[in-house]
Image (cartoon, rainbow, N blue to C red; front, side, top):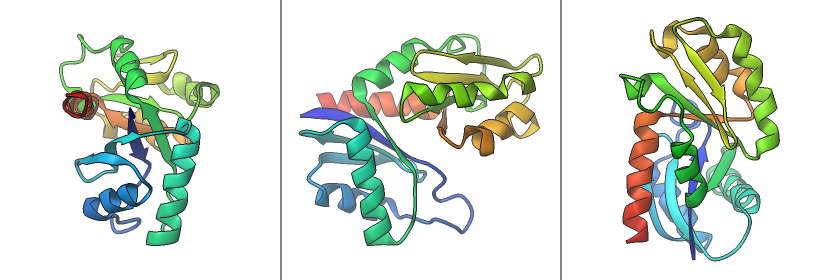
Length: 181
């Protein structure tokens, strides 16, 4: 069985699209996944799956959420090996003083990175932006709320993506390591 990370976009923000993590764990277990563990309350799930592509697994999870919980939610599934590559490729990992100001944009497939790259003109120094092989990275040195690029990345320009801050990615890596033990 392979380890995957499911990243749900836009849940538990405000009053809309509320999903209890216990319900999410039960839903994934009902789909036949094992070792299901959630992180935080924002739709981060580490689990093991026997077969299927990340895109198919994501579609199955999204469909189950719609059917069982009545909520339409985009889901991106990342194999654990790809999460490790995304972390290794982070050009700002050692220079961003505050991990909550460093956003990683995860996409369903690499072709969606071109849409995310559209935020580049909005990046204003000291912000930094990089489109990598598997993800995009935005360091909002003054904070995400004060960044037009950050606002665009978590908004319409980043619609094909879902973002997590660097601190959350590091916690997901630790959860993957625990699942692999």
